[in-house]
Image 1 (cartoon, helix red, strand yellow):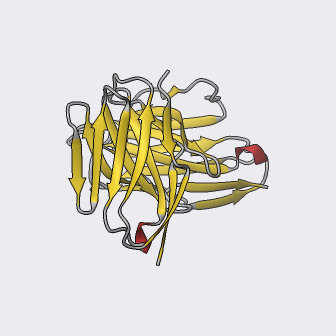
Image 2 (image 1 turned 135 degrees about the vertical axis):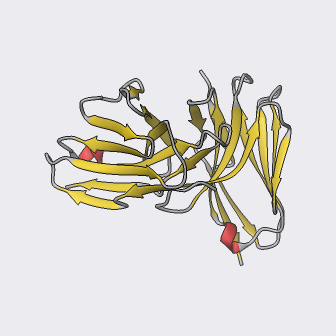
Length: 116
Length: 111
């Protein structure tokens, strides 16, 4: 299947700093990527839909100024957690849709963020 | 609002047993349904994708069925192995961009 790479896999930062997470589609182009957040033993919650060359679409309750999303190319989307706080600690996962495979989503390995 | 429920939340079986994981959804107007596997601390691995016009998909020891009218999907795992231990997530596609996930079933296959 298609490969989605996410980096970094783990990051620990101090409260107040900003953290950038990258999501790359390695062997296909993705006009749309998705960012999810997952709390322990819970399912994935969609945060935003990232569209190449345009603004991301955020889900209700997700602060767009807090979670900055940039999708500058067909293979890269980034999520920046700005001024991180301990409550932002979570597992963040991105996914991308291969336009040649109707409807199937491929996921990155996830990024574990711990804010001290 | 589409809600996705997976039962049971956790399941433990001895190696070699056949098992069924259940997924139910409240709105039958779905675009597709996808089953994923998630290992602890890892991302999701796509297992099977069923389009709304399909009834089932098979891959190796896995078989997924879809009954839109009753709002149900099942994932059948034959001859389970310890390596199958993981959390299995069901996701319902509302359109080409929007998916709703169940909370998952945590499967443990004991040697």
